[in-house]
Image (cartoon, rainbow, N blue to C red; front, side):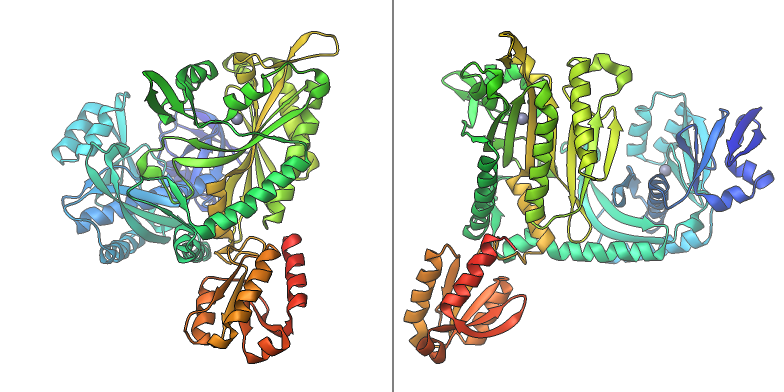
Length: 638
Ligand SMILES: [Zn+2]
Ligand SMILES: [Zn+2]
């Protein structure tokens, strides 16, 4: 007999029995509490045969794990509707994903929007019939024969990859799928779902395998939460940086040049210059030393750094004079070379070397996405070399700079992930205990002191050092990964990075990689979507649009434009022979913060009629007063 502990009660159960049976016979409340359960920390469903005693908890649909079970079960429901409506459709896989789920199918023709509506309707019908998800187990060979007979070639391939002697299936109504589970107990629990889109997807992500049709959907435990999510998706669509980027003429990706390579147009480049200047000024103020390093280097350097071992598939190799070169995927080894150009005494530390360093990484074409996932990008990179005693103050300094800079860009909410090593597997990590302890404590102390919410992930650190990742929350509540503070106990060993201590002896230096914005490209995407293109005046590509009512104001308009530009203001003049209304509309479409309307009166009185994007019509004011106010607004970055 097994003994199960649940909510302080204990139950006896025959081995092989299920929670479903247990709840029917002994503990009816169980059904009401959850849609799945956890036994000794592992998620199981009401139909999984029980083989172990232990502690159980119920999982509600509101928890992260419950939501996954709910969404994956909805994928089964969707597949059942698809095979009913499209006889002969072959099934691939249907996992839960971050914001929903998908299922891949092989069908004769691509799905159309009307198909999705039809599938969704049938899903509701099947769900309302309230079928149970029934688990079946059968010998592997038998499962192979069954799916082979049904022509389910992808399932056959999946079974061939399963080493276990038995495989499990789940059946609701007429539909059986090969699956490990877990699922919700009954289809009636699946009520708040929506099919969202269709995309082509290669079987197993391999472009040499068949192209399948992937239907994306989402599901929630309540109507409210589903509607909230759909509303947010609509908002996100309007803010999509690819769309806004085109409307505001900020950047493009040119087919002819290749995927994942960004062309910054004058408007986008104007913004980038503002961001870069701000970044450089703040770093120089904090004793960072700016450097510039090459874009390629001989392969031997990357062998020494270890990149050719653990980063090879993301690197571009070139042949120059019969020697192999690498297009740099990271700036670190170059900054180390600059650090090592001379011997350093402990008195010189910390040394902070910074660069807006452009790197190239080979990403699969399928994952490229606007500015957010690219092949060439500029990291706002820096490497700090310091002593053990300086570690905490350095981490503190970086975090303060992160908060100051991101705060200035308008982000005030952050989530921190602290990745530390698994102390039970010490042998898997490079570096000494004292190094790990110093670094992990510094990271955690500093984050705690800053009062930031953080999550400590044991065993999530990479082999060469602990780190924190900082995610910011944007205007519609989405999180974007941007800053990283990463310790490295690997490169300093490989390159013998050290300093001369007070004792006159050589000591290894602590090395910290850090990026605040992450990459200029990705951060630009974040900014665009956060503001929906409606940038604060200090960032706006064009800050002032001068609009003439008639030709007579042209000389005054040109004089004004020159004056504003001399003050460092990005001003343009619209001198087209268009009606004033049309010029205003165009400036509004470009989301320009200020319009200056010039008529006869403004020329005579040397004033400007100000239209502010935020405050509307501000009336006529003397030109000097306007310039003074605007310069102050830009300087304070408000
Ligand atoms: Zn399943
Ligand atoms: Zn680095």
